[in-house]
Length: 274
Image 1 (spheres, one colour):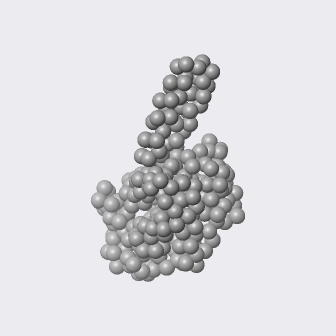
Image 2 (spheres, one colour):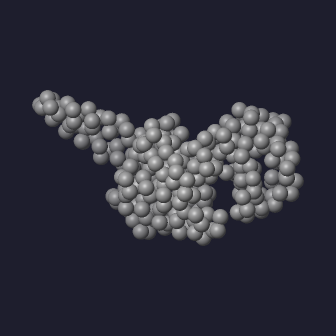
Image 3 (cartoon, helix red, strand yellow):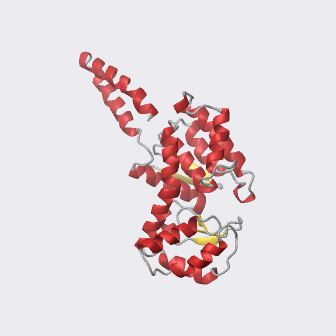
């Protein structure tokens, strides 16, 4: 919201100049294009870019739609991790997903595991789950209702809150993505290593654009706080999704997260050219 109000006077002055100077038609057109380019992460193409970026870190692939059926225990103490953004059996978001899926499609192949999912919530236990559950998950992934449920829960729990907070902090698409990637990994809580706590740590070091601060300075402070949070946990000790991806876009001044994008995660190179 912040940057829209500040850009309004600029539009007026460009229009006024354009009326008096024929040559400035080119400048007017490029200014209009750059204004049009500054879209939020909610734009369908930008959102797809965000999903590809997260998938490169979570699944070593840009094909995020191929991850609906992904499920394994990655040994991080959160039980099973599955689906397009790593819903976990130990952190209640997998339970919420299966509950929502059962609400929109009663009698689905995962519904019978709800009692077990409720019991293991908050632990890394596989009790009542195991291979029957992982097989049922992979089978459910072929059901468009389960795919829709995963996207619904991703948006409700992670994407929408992250983008909404970023916009109220005055951040453009890159900052919105930086918030989204953090909430996916660290969860939406307020403790020091959750999304809310990371933001508070950053805000102690730098003002958000909404507070009159520099967007680049604030995002650097945010990525510093994010790295510190990642390093508290062995499973997240590789910080390349920050160092060789998000920080690369920030150093390039690509606050709108416009393609072409080139980055690395875990040493592997990726690109989105358009």
